[in-house]
Amino acid sequence: MRRHIPNILTLTRIALAVAFFAVLTPWRYDASPLAKGQSPDVWLLIATGLFMLAALTDALDGHLARKWNVVSVFGRIMDPFADKVLIIGAFIYLAGPGFSSGNRQVSGVEPWMAAVILARELLITSIRAAFESRGVSFAATASGKWKMILQSLCIPAVLLLLCFDPSRTLLDGRAIDILTWSTVLVTAWSAIPYIHRAVTASRSTPL
Image (spheres, rainbow, N blue to C red):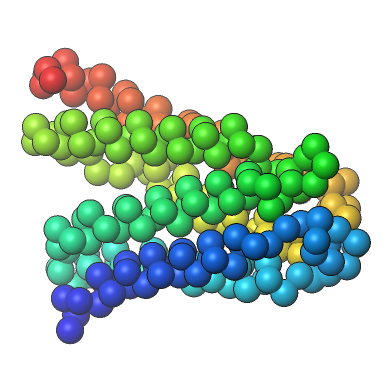
C-alpha cells in the first residue's frame, strides 16, 4: 500500500486543481460582493481551500516516496506535471478576465507575469530534459524549492486578501502587489542557477 500512496496523492492534486479551476471559471470580480466592498466571498474561500489542500499533497507525496523508498517513474513524471498544472494554471486564472475590473487586475497578477512564470518553467524543463537524457543530474536546486514555496503561499494569500480586504486597505493597498511582484521576481531569479549549471555542464558534455 505504501508504494501507491504517493502516486494517489499526486493524482489527488490534479483532481483538486481541476476543482479549483472549475470554481474560478464562472467567477467574476465585478459580479461578486467584493466589488461592493462586502466580504468574504464564499466562492473564493472554497477556491482557496481547494488550492491549499492541493499544495498539501505536494508537500506530502515526494516526502513519503523518499521516506518509504518507493520513488517511481510515474511519480517522477506526474509529480512535477501536477505541480505545474496547479501553479501555472492558478496564475493564468489570476491574470484572466475573472479578476479584471476596469483597466486593472484586482489580483495583482498581470498577464505578462503569468507569461514570465510559464516561460521559466518551459525553459527549465527543456534544460533538464536535454541534460538528463545525457546522464547529467539536474535535481531541483534550493532556489527552485524556494520559488515553489513562495508561489504556493502567494496564490492563497492573494485570494484571502481579496476576500477579507476588498477595499485593499492593507499596507495602503499594496499588500497584494508586493506579494505578486516578489513572487515573479523570485521565480525569474530561480532560473539563474539552472542556467549556470547548464552552461557549466555543456562545456564538459557538449549537446
